[in-house]
Image: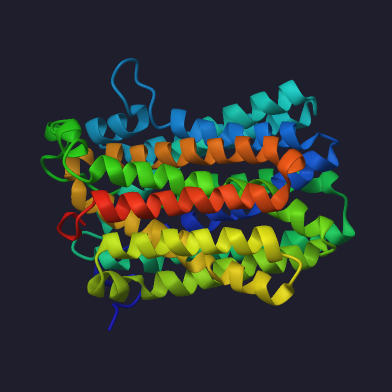
Length: 395
């Protein structure tokens, strides 16, 4: 039986509150950002580029320290002041995004996307490490806390989907600024966690050696491929469904269906990871992702199959993300956790940016079917690499 929330000194609700607001912002951007740029009159290629910019910053933000990698991860590991980095990043995210009210030109929006994302994507890897630090001896409870991020996502997509049936998308930036303010406030509610006694002393020691150990690089390649496969989903799904005749309210509900499935998966992940290896969980996630993208590309006009495809989000994000966090935690020591999480975020950002870019250029020329078909191939490639390059004992 799982411990009750807040048991064993874990600040359950404070950690959960941060995840709720952080992923509420993702719930506001993933379904609606491309729709907002379309509302402003940009072509699909420009939309793909603007959506890709925050994903590119997801790679750069955690990984820019002159010659050595992992600026934010290295600072967190070296100083132990992860919560200060989180709060600083949250404040800068809000300040930079507020510049969107100055102009709506392509160049200005590109700058706003880059600036706010540089800080936004630096926040989560550090907060993941803070959460795992509070869960010392109880790592299986991670999914119980992280599910509140999924709840924040659900609330946002449902509410915003309904609101934009009544209101113009001109109100969209104001909604994002409000959510970003919630991230700032919640970051000051979270208590810090004391770093492991030897964490700062060993920060950086052995990180490259662990990275080059068998199966670890293959894991990170699979992370990148999985995010490449998500490119059409996060960039064009809402526009795809709107063009097929679905209302914005229904589109919001369909996004929430996937995240409800994700929440249920998070609740079950401690038992699943207790029974199956991370390798098997990830392989299943990749295979189901390939099937999901094929369904979305070919049968999105069929509501029943569309719902089935959205339920598969439980695997393509829920089990995938929880298993990845588990892999990183088991692979890297206390003084390397920040860098391990930052590299995970960076490779995910690189893959996501490539996915957004290719889908932006192929959407009009090749069509949704081929674009999602390429996503299926990327997910299948990840499954093959996971099966052939990572062994069960490594995960």
